[in-house]
Length: 508
Image (cartoon, rainbow, N blue to C red; front, top):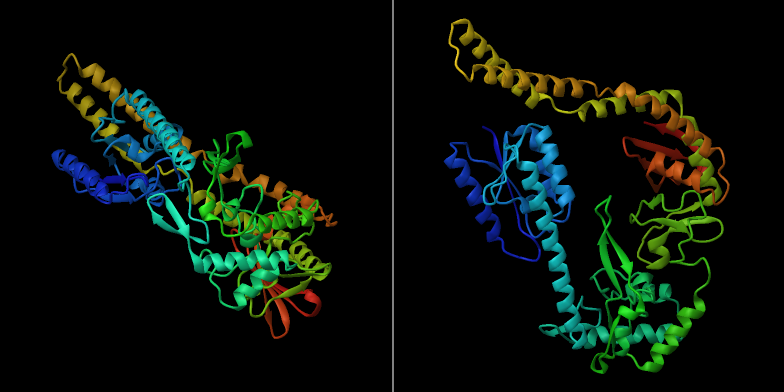
């Protein structure tokens, strides 16, 4: 019997020993059943509502290698009722038995669907109740003027929930306000701080976004009202997207904000704060950052600097350039690429090589191989088929020898049904043919060619087509020429460009 055990504890219960407690229960259960010691998968300090837990994903990927998976209770597997049921269905399909050694859940029983549904709902309700209680506690702390969130730059912990001004960092905050009011831009301020080696809030280099911030969210040096002694809590909340499982920030109405005056935490004067806000509002123009405007240029967001790895952005009317050099001044050898030449070279190369018939044939072979690797594993079903066939043959042999009991007919029918179920599962897996999917790849390629036919400025479909084909491209200099190495999702492509960034060779 091949056995695995999964254990997890949440970030709201920081107990490393909890993992060993759970695994001890799982090992004891395996010993009682006479099974071998289980292979262990764990996740530490990760909420059961998250689907991207590394140990959990590794368990699901390796599930086909096991006959039984043990958990202390079903909530360790997942606290999301939908995800929990999907995981159970996936394991059941793979022929893997899931057992909760403490709560009694066992997918080997006919009633396991009701058990899984009820346990999953209880786990999800637990998370909702925990979130409500946590929010209530944070509200009380915020109303009392205590910290109900993170620690902003310029402050230090002075006790449980208490903050005090960090004079060294506060001096940097005052300098930023003074420079900004004097007419220096956030980009210029960031470059000056980086040139002097002043550590940023995260210990690295300063970015203009850390200084300018976002007034709507109240974050950043120039936009956080805590620097004038006003704490605002409950501006937003995080909710999980029902399809992707990702946490998404949602803004709350101003009527739900909790505003507390904390004059002892003021680092700048009210006059400095108001002057900075007037400048921020005066400099905001329609179509600037945070306006939601889509990129205007074909390769915006797709090119990376080969020196520092930063994104290449439009630095003037004619060129893409390194964003870190522009915003932070930290790139030693920034790359600058003419916009028109880069777009023409990239499109010509894509049409000539990536969208050629030869390239499509290579793509088709790679996709077919990937689909075959991802086809359902029939090993467990074949083992069940062999076992059911042996059981049926034994019963038939007993009948031929005249050994007939009242339960013989029922046992034979059960064996026949097990054979039929395993055969249907194997047939269903065999029916997953890559040939049924691959013709659509040709249609997709043709659609991409059509979208690339119009490369007018601001053409969203053309930009999406390029992004789909190349992913990102890292631009470097080699012997005075510009070289763009393209890391596509399924291949590595190198584009070599000569003078004027026109393509010379492509390799796949």
